[in-house]
Length: 348
Image 1 (cartoon, helix red, strand yellow):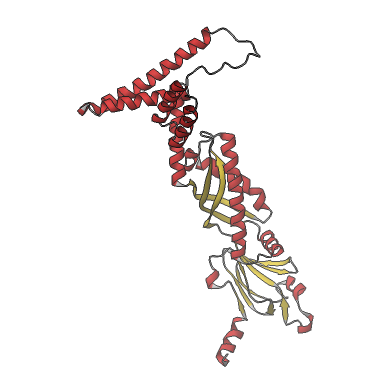
Image 2 (image 1 turned 45 degrees about the horizontal axis):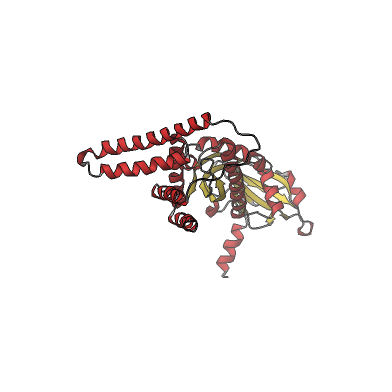
């Protein structure tokens, strides 16, 4: 190190302020602990400077330029080092911004969440950003020193983890209690309600550190594209099944619909009309089938409470025909159909 570097270093030690590279940070810790008396300390308009020794805040200075002297700053006398003859004091100096900091990004997995509409457990993610403001700098600094997280990076890493934890818990809780379909949640339909719940859930976690989350921004809950396709298909099947009157009736309607679509392909310009008529006919006949079953059940005499379940009187050939219809309707996969068919062929 040259003589000019030494002079420059000594001059810098006579002035203390937040480093230019740390202007956007919430917490900035001055790197030196031994401070000369008469040193000039500059505090920006949107921050405070805290003097900490042995984990305790000994004093605070607001915005402005301050000469560090016991004559005008009495609390410095508690920080003096006796062996220096009163020329130096020892303390950790923290600059804490008290303005609102926006665009703090966070994100991560929520975990498997059960969709109330289909009953499937789907892996979900959350990402977005939030704004944060320090309301009590003393609480924040004491808490950070106690946790050994004195830098801005360590503080934000810990804090983002708290936000993700509460977001995960509240999202799963809302889906269970409100019975919101997961597809509606990922579409952003409940962003405002979820934001309010998450902010309320974060409050007890951050109050003790003198912080507040002002608002959430660009808050998104997402799932994998392939899971979204699966959910959409199953949601459609569930809706159609309810419309047709039940799962078996839906399968019958799907089979009839497939037949009508085959007819529509030869209909030229009337395809749309034929398909619409086919869909109506398919579900109409399925509903008629369901009504007939209901009437038969109503006309059937009541069975004793302890009566044994009636034996299946359908022949293997009839059951083969039924599972073929279910396969053609898309209800049974090829693997499920082949397994059932193999079982029934043994009975022929």
